[in-house]
Length: 226
Length: 368
Image: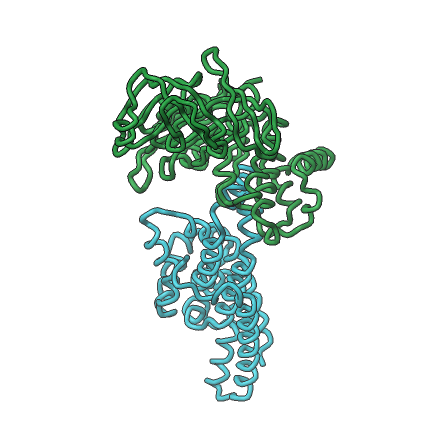
């Protein structure tokens, strides 16, 4: 079993889920409350990674993050190494790829918080941010947990995007799903089987946890963002 | 010190209802009731005062401090207005217990001041036994008291109550009503409360703002608005033809003798006594509960037998409105047949009969 790849995958998944929890929350809050006509557009953009083939997403990322692109050039100027085929590049790709898995559960949870509670907090002297952290977040804990767990699990299993923008560099971009693919290519079915079993176990445990947490507030899969 | 609240706001609601409310409050006393039927725009006005709804145009100021001014582009956010807002649907924080709900607005105070404040409101509203309870275990009346305590703990400059009694019925309602009166008198805070209930407005408010279909039709004291409606819309809305300020003189066997003084003359009426009324009351008489008969000495079971002069006869649909001078003004609603058969003639004498249970007594605030 490729423990280096497993460790890298775990690190990537934890980082992705953590960053998405923090950066996705304002977006989810906005989606849950906004009355703008642009909302369907934004919702569709957020949900795109759900339906796009990972290779398509990977292709666009390859172009957008490459050294010829403004983002890639800026990163290279700053960090001194290219963004593509690096762990950081992989992280950027994972953030986009797992975005809907974090934003949708959070938006659902935030949408279920009674507006009058937020208004009560505002009248009691809480700023908009204060009301969010003191009322909305404590009442959305389940949604936040399932956002984290789903983003984590989804990143753990990603393959196509990783292959497109990360390549297969041991210790830097070789994730566990790539390692399994490699094992199979080398006809080392025993190694592939062991790694697959670990991944299967982790995924199952994560989903059991999510469903257990969601039991009383509906399934983890929202129809829309509300 | 009397606070002065100036309100002038215009807003078109998403359903197309136009609200154009303009009034000043505080001249008659600290408590103002916005009174009107549902859909009149009462809640819109209250939410605009709290800063939760932005009016399309107008100006709102409390003691000269501008909360909202469309022309100058001022709209102070809710958390900076320091209003205590209690919504119609109670909004206690379900993730906090009663004590933490009440203390929610006390962040930023020193621990000592926070505990002092908390002790003060808990004592004021008698919440000591509720403090550690979870919110979902509270009854309707308890929820209202905790919401009120939470709003008061924050030391608001203006207390805003949206239909504070509508979620309750029967004894709980009467209990909270007297509780509110007590709190209003203890805190002397400027209060704006929204209600569609005449009893609530009369019992609690110094000033009544009659709001009909988004427009302020009348602003005045309770007896002003309910006793002498300025417009037909208000008269239709208030539904009680006679409202008289009165004083309880004597209570015996559940029967109260009340003195009514209007225009220099005093009349004594008899009504059913109720618990916890106090001395100052409103005597409310519906026109259709007043019986008219020819002068004579027929014995009657009615406790109130008032010689009166017919001052006006106004046909109102199938009924006729008879305005009487019985020492105090009194209105009777009778059928057209009764007018022609009795007969009821302008400036002639009649006897007005009112049963004691037909005189509805409501508590009246001192000085109102």
